[in-house]
Length: 180
Image (tube, rainbow, N blue to C red; front, side, top):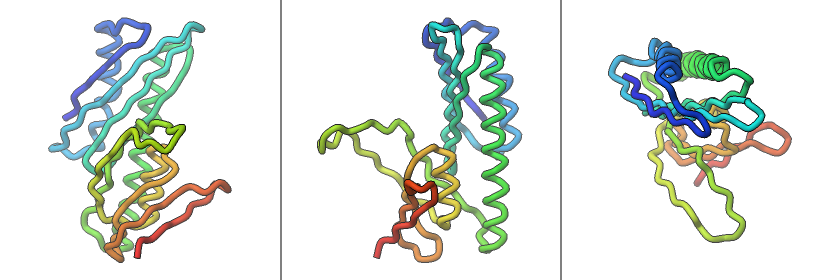
């Protein structure tokens, strides 16, 4: 069951906007298991040039969905974000189902991560994160990294049981670091 946390920046979130956002994002629930409980974090922004930006983040136990869209229409932005999230879910389900059939895994889970990365200008550590590593293969880790929009992703390799990292190279391809 999805709960909603809807915030507005430079805009008052009216009942009609709230109802529309809830209605559109609730259509994604058909892709989730019945017992999944998650909070959809929705941020609505209005810029001085009258463009509207909608950001949606839905952290799930096995995946973090995130999308943002900007357009000249608030409702249009909500529609675009919902479509983008649906494409992410379909891509994830297709790829995981294919991989699990090939590898013989019963249930693959992904590590939810926080994509609020803060830049560091010096060597001072300004944030610490703790994650639980879920077993997966490198291809699935690349998929999760791409869906989050990150440049790297830490995971437990399902074959070796070791900790590994996939990363995006400057040439656009991917690299894998395996711990010994």
